[in-house]
Length: 279
Ligand code: C2E
Ligand code: CA
Ligand code: CA
Ligand code: CA
Image 1 (cartoon, helix red, strand yellow):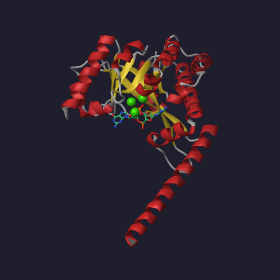
Image 2: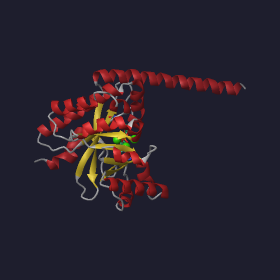
Image 3: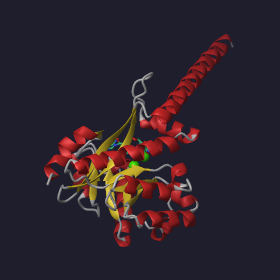
Image 4: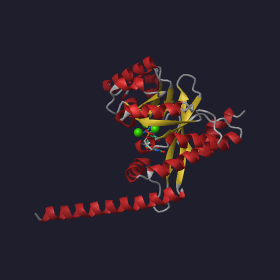
């Protein structure tokens, strides 16, 4: 019994420590949302599977608060979503990406389309389309220079209302991808009603290729469906040559993963991927 009580006390102490950290993180994140300090964007390249040419990049938020050292997106994005801070942080990310794109273009580089991740709260924010329009205008970006990635669950909820927003974004030339495809409870029939351009197969299925039949079956089904619907397919989380080989028999257009390129900061991205495209 005594031991039980000690365990309980330890448990309470641990809970307390975690609450404390969460609170401290949230305070720091609020500060970052206000000032932008400690925020950066990394870019991960997407390549055409067959030609190997650069076709795009995904913008990924990085947070390095002064008080803590780097915090992974897996930790701070959920916190940002719960607290609502994802709105100001997402706005900062869009401004950072757009400014970066303008700088690259001014320097004579030709950046490919960059995809930005949108959380549900951002997507359902009433003025998303106006913000995106303003961004294109303010930074003088060509149509399609910025696109978006959304998860299935966002679109599933109220998908009739989603269609209007997606169509408005499409009319700006934005590519629209469904992220982590296959992990949600897809009723696949809704796909044909959504004006999206791209499916990103979740990396869990890519990593399962060659390891279990289930993953191969899902990759075959998803890519077959995408082909029928005329959608581009991105395989994400490709880490090994064997995985890339295994993908060659499916309808896969683009490869994204540590095998072909990790997320890197803007300067590294320009040096490694953009300079050879310089006019
Ligand atoms: P995601 O959108 O699925 O992004 C892909 C994640 O997979 C990134 O993790 C990327 O670094 C990682 N990754 C890429 N290739 C490989 C690979 O070959 N192997 C493995 N193991 N991982 C790979 P990251 O940057 O830690 O981001 C995690 C998640 O946080 C993202 O998942 C996304 O849901 C969210 N996130 C990141 N940036 C933003 C943002 O600006 N806004 C929103 N709303 N969410 C974001
Ligand atoms: Ca994504
Ligand atoms: Ca993903
Ligand atoms: Ca994900």
